[in-house]
Length: 299
Ligand SMILES: Nc1nc2c(ncn2[C@@H]2O[C@H](COP(=O)(O)OP(=O)(O)O)[C@@H](O)[C@H]2O)c(=O)[nH]1
Ligand SMILES: [Mg+2]
Ligand SMILES: [Zn+2]
View (tube, rainbow, N blue to C red):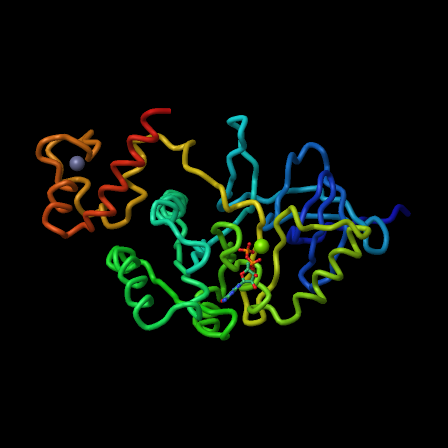
């Protein structure tokens, strides 16, 4: 009788070339070859795999993805970063200085992917009362638009349980410039991370996984993906005329413009423009919309 290699369901934890680390439903890790016909897999992918021996297997089936996060490459192509994400955490910090234009970009991507974003301001321990008030003022336009803005300090262990609540029962990814504290936040949220990383590295034959995304399980449910490559994911693969839908607070005005193909930049009877003039839409957010629209139109 031939051995019946039954398929198991697994979750891709990390991937490197034609190999992936897959976790089964019991938390057991396997190093799996990826069948060439499946194309490129990425962390967060749900798969079927067969055990070949011990901790080794082969991935036979890729299940349908509910979302993919991609990062554009310089050559105009893009690279998969993560799959099946349900929450994007936009991490900004007091240092290095944040840019509202960058926050807007991440939010546009999240909105167009229909993924609920959360904004985190990290390193609040570096603020005093005065600079904190000034900084929070800069984030007021996002709260006004309907986003939650959380203040955290890994240093002072502040705001971490609130963040944890926002991540429960989601597959989340932290995005933001290098140095804002994404990895520090991941470590603070996952007490057993060192053990897990150690296990992963061993399974990858000691190869470092620092250049690819890794998925971690949160202690209270949910998964968290740490990705070193997402800081520079741009929006230049977007059409300028898609952009307005990425601004959540524009939503209720979009169908009130005089022209139904309104670009919300210069047309008479533009309800978005009027709302910005009235202060119903934050005028500075609207100005940044105009700048990004011009940038995308010029490509
Ligand atoms: N003062 C302060 N420093 C922090 C905080 N979180 C992270 N850092 C520091 O910021 C630097 C960059 O952190 P890291 O997690 O590597 O950032 P990443 O590039 O976004 O992953 C490190 O030196 C951290 O120790 C914080 O809440 N307060
Ligand atoms: Mg990092
Ligand atoms: Zn308009």
